[in-house]
Length: 275
Length: 264
Image (cartoon, rainbow over all chains, first blue to last red; front, side, top):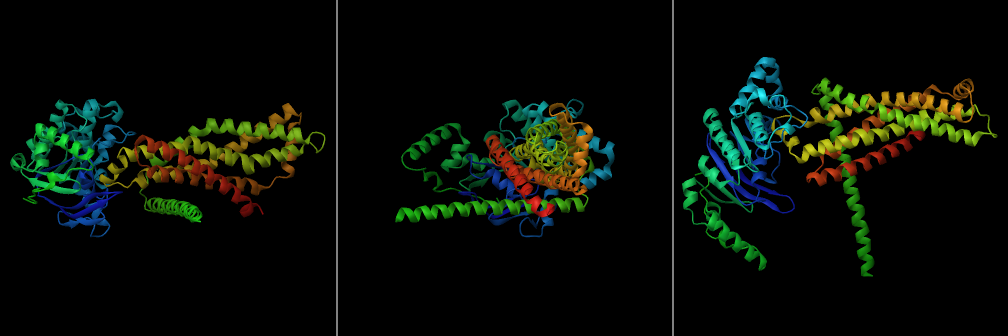
C-alpha cells in the first residue's frame, strides 16, 4: 500500500498543496488532471526522485522520508517506475537496458543464461519478440516499442508496485490501447499495485479501480470510475465528457481574459479519499 | 541619492548572487569528489567502464593531441630561432623549446584538447541523460549514477591525461627539433646539447603533475555541470557552454598556481 500524507511541494510556485491519498494493495489507481498540476511530481515523491517540502510517503508501512537512508533503497527495490518517454539508456542495447532492471546481487546469482531467459520473458510479456529487439539500440525502435521496452525493464525486477508516468502519451490509438491492455495484464499476472498518471481518461476508466483528479496541487476527486462519471463537480464533468470539456475550456479562457482563472468549479469539489 | 543607494544595492546583490553560485558549485564539486572516492573505495566502479572511458579519453584524443603538440613545437622553435639569431647562441633554442613544451605548452594545450573533445562531450552526454530522465531512471532502478557514470569518466581522465601529456611532450620536442633544423639550420646535435644543458628531471615530473591535476579537474567539472543540467535541449546547450568556460578558467588558474607552488 502507498500512503501520501499531507505532501507539499513548491518549486517557484506551489505544485502540491497537502495531498492525502491511499493506494491499496493490488489496486490500480489513475491520477488525472490538467497539465502542470503536480501529477508526475506526486509520482516522483514516491521513490525520492523529488523530495517533498513537507509531508511523507509511506510504502508498505515504511516511511520514505521519515526513516533512515537505507529505506529509500529498499522502497526502490519494491517499486518500478515507467517513465513518460521510457528513459531508456541510449548507449545500451535493449538487453543491457533490461539487465539494469535486475539488482547487481541478483545478476551475479543468476548467471548469464538465466538472466537472458528473464530478459526474454519480460520482453514477451510486453508483446515484443526478443529475437527482433534484444540487440537493438533505443534509437532503432519506434515510440511504441520504446514504451514497451521501458515497461519490460520495469517488470524484469518483479516489483510489487508499478508507477506509470503518462504511459500512453504520444502514442497512436492502437499503441495506446496495446499499452493499456498491458497495464491490465501485468496487474492480473503479477498482482501489482499500480498508480497511473494519465491524460487519457477514457482509457483509464476502462482499467482502473479508482480515479483521482488532481488540480492545482490538491485532490479534487477520488472515487470509482462509476462515481467519476456521475459526479456533478464541474471539473470532473469537464474531464469525463468531451462536450463539457469544450464548454469548460471556453469558460476558463473567458475568465482568464477577464482578469483571472475561474474558481467556480472548485465550489462543492467532492473527495472520497481512500474510499 | 536614492539612485545611488539602488546602484549600491544592485552591485551588492550581484556580488551576493555570484558568491552564492561559487559556493553552490564548490559544494557540489566537493560532494561529487567525495562520492566518487567512496564509490572507488567500496569497489562499486566497473573496470570495464573505466577501460572503455579511458579508450575514449586517451586513444581517441591522440590524433588531435598529435596535431596540437606538433604545431606548438614548430611555432616555439621558429619564434625562438627568429629572436635568437645573431644575439644568443642558437643551441639555446634546444633548451627553450624543451622547457616551453614540457613545462607549459604540452600540459595546457592537451588540457584544452581534453576540454573541447572530452569535457564538452561529457557535459552534453550527462546533460542529455538528465533532461531525458535517464538519470532519474538509474535512481529508480536502485542505481547510483556516481559509480556508473561519474567515477569511470573521472578515473579515465586521471589515467589518460599523463599518458597524453607524456606523448605530447615527445611529439612537441621532436617537432621543435625538426623545425629548428629546417628553419634556422640548427643541427640535431646542437639542439640536443642545448636541451641537455638546462635540463632538470623535475621538469618532467612537474609536467606530469600538471597532467594529473588537469586530468582530474576537467572531467570533474564536466560531470558536475552535466548532472546540474535542466530544461531540455536549450538547457543542455547552456550547461555545455558554461562547462567549457568553467573548465578553461579552472585549468588556466591552476596553471598559474603551479610555478609558485612547484618551481620555486
